[in-house]
Length: 300
Image (cartoon, rainbow, N blue to C red):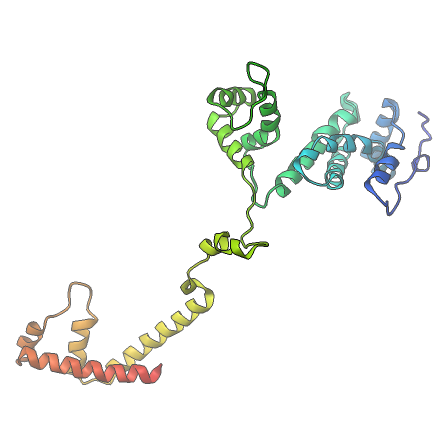
């Protein structure tokens, strides 16, 4: 390819492509670079920071992204979104590409393209991320294909359902993961997102998660705030009410009702201390409690 290659030699992608097909058609019109031209442009970008050279490298490999993204259509995500994420990976690859290592950009870029597409799928395939560890990611992107290869029984007839114990062992050995990780991922993949609230039929309302996962009303923020304010008011009012009692009544109430658990004084103990009958202590206590209750109700 001529060393005079510039952006002008490339057809431009329409600024507002009317469809994905139009974008793919435009991307496929970009010429494929020769190894010499690829190295020249890569060195120019690396050594001189020439953005036009980087742009030519990206544009000439858009068809690669389209081809890779097509392999992930089975995850139910839009092809255009997969291509967009793959293009991000391609740009990262161009930024890190070293033309002097003897590797073509197409081989180097595939890793980055797949990595971005994988991350996009994991973020968007389910509301809850299904794979976080390295083993889980490996299983997520390979388990279904391995299950398909095991789907033929000894007679050549396909079978459905979960993996058998022997199949689990084969998949674990193939991917270098633990058998229990295979079982866990198969369970995750077989599940589905469930709407918290009923989406259509009112008869299903009682069976929607909102019906049995709703928090107790007493734990909502408003109830908690009201309860805290009430407790603070009672604590403050209790102290004020105690201060309004005479010393003997205050001492009786504190030792009978405000002492540590298991250390409350009995009527007979207080009667012996004050030199009166237990009935008299009970009367003093009852009168003090009525007085305090009235003061607390007035504050509330």
